Amino acid sequence: PLVSTGDIAGPAAELGTGCGAFNAILLEHISAIIEGAERAGLPVILQLSQNAVRYHGALAPIGAAAVAAARGAEVPVAVHLDHADEPELVHEAVELGFSSVMYDGSTLDYRDNLQSTKEVVAYCHDRGVWVEAELGEVGGKDGVHAPGARTEPREARAFVEATGVDALAVAVGSSHAMLTRDAELDFELIGALRAEVPVPLVLHGSSGVADEHLATAVRHGMTKINIATQLNKVFTAGVREQLAARPGTVDPRKYLSAGREAMAGEVARLLRVLRP
Ligand code: G3H
Ligand code: ZN
Image (tube, rainbow, N blue to C red; front, side, top):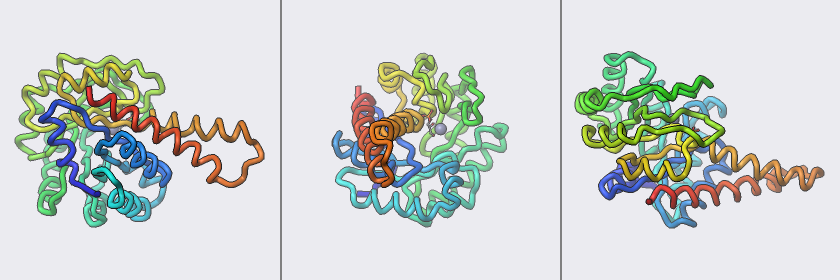
């Protein structure tokens, strides 16, 4: 069934386990994420980023598909709008029945981020929608990795109290879109953030973090673990292998199903890693 993101992240934070938040671009990714969660028997957060929406040219077709797929799932599935900085897109996601949104004002200065996050929170909370914001910029989205970015714990607490957000994405050493899994996380800072911040913490750029370090991050207090690139790697490898083995293939179902199967296996595996 389709559930609120708070119904997944809240209990996970309380129990000290992680929850997987996986990005979809294609309908096949949506199926793979749900299939992987069903195989693991665990809830999952399925997310569509503003960038993925831009690829499709509109939110409604892929967004409605995600919501419908979540409703038909055997495990709890939340549908989340990821990295949105356009309020109109947030409004559209809410109207489509999304469980939650991430408003990303991380490139703004502190006061502007606080002000615009507050406005999104007011709109979403009126409609029962959970909101994630970001403080301290996790780099890599523009191809420029900035592993040195850090979120200051007391500032993070003040930001959460002033905005009323339900979860906070923090900079602790990860970076988006890494192809190698060798990012070094600041576990001490994760612990300090956990002690100060009263809402679940979100790790972005988790593809660059090795499995064992993801588990350690969860043990130190990270809750929502966002993973995109690692799944793209696995999906594309599956497609590539299939096309190489059968160069005469023309029916996309023949190779997309190979990618989908590989991705479902990786989702199930990662969901277990996040429950140390
Ligand atoms: O919001 C999405 C995540 O931060 C994904 O980052 O592609 O490096 O796993 P990643
Ligand atoms: Zn991210």
